[in-house]
Amino acid sequence: MFKPQIKVPATYMRGGTSKGVFFNLTDLPKPAQVAGEARDNLLLRVIGSPDPYGKQTDGMGGATSSTSKTVILAKSTQADHDVDYLFGQVAIDKAFVDFSGNCGNLTAAVGAFAISNGLVDNSRIPNNGIAVVRVWQANIKKSILVHVPITDGEVQETGDFELDGVTFPAAEVKLEFIDPADGDGALFPTGNVVDALEVPGVGTFAATMINAGIPTIFVNAADIGYNGTELQDDINSDAAALEKLETIRAYGAVKMGLINTIDEAQARQHTPKVAFVAAPQDYIASSGKQINANDIDLLVRAMSMGKLHHAMMGTAAVAIGTAAAVQGTLVNLAAGGGAISEVNFGHPSGTLKVGAEATKVQGEWQVTKASMSRSARVLMEGVVRVPQ
Image (cartoon, rainbow, N blue to C red):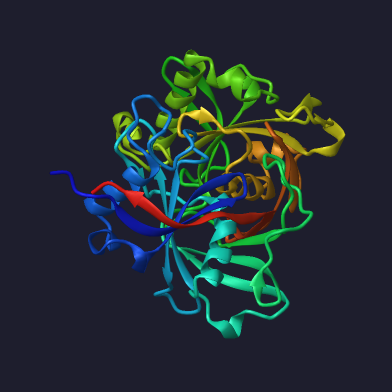
């Protein structure tokens, strides 16, 4: 006898250049309200993974790293915060939910969901203006401020803010990542702003390995055979390129102390990220838009879950802004070097501006804040059905 499907209240939201299924913790079935196998199984089945066809046809996932995402929100257990935000990156072809990092793009939707679902105290929501939602990012134990526009007591979703990688304009949502160095680790886990990264079969080249927003390994595009203007098809249709970039990621993860052996990288697909940088050049973005070298500070291309990202992960953008603010990193040098507090970088879909405040304290670089703007909106709300 086959049991009927269960209904779980859920909201399908776009945040930045990502989208995912959002849940209020208390709406989940009791066994899934705590971390463990029941929760993982629920999230996998909601999204439609693991799918050997790589399509996620029998679930809510969109068969890309940007659309295979889940979020669980709850009233905050932390002092001076409104909401706890747990992010789960769902593998597409494996039975695996990665909780090792944040999703910066979906952070833009967290504030709106929290307000609309009663997770923020009414006293903190103006009738008209900006509600500042204090988010505790539970994956990396960090604070994020999400500035949500409010009109007549409701979240304002529509507007004229344009974000490259998203087709339609919407209301601007400003994000501030407070003390963005990831987790408990140092901003630069190796103690250096640039290291020589030795990758067997690939070579030895300069790398900046940073824990900010999300652990990220930056390399120079030219050192690994690229020019920094690549679009998705240039990388994602090349199996040898994907293998090379994954190998770099694995060896960088070991050097950063995130894993002990190369083999462990398979079970930690979401972090670290690998990105390659270059000085500004003219290029045509994936939308056909002309990007002029004079309008940008540098080029960045980033890998997510084994593929070149169609735009830029929000957390990686935090890493870019942070690394740009620290003199001598590969990101800082690609942007022209010196003191930098904001960069406008070119990615496959267009451009993105990100800022950061960096200071040197007793010889160690510290970043107090990174900021950027995204947008978000509800796509659908109701219940998601899940076979038991």
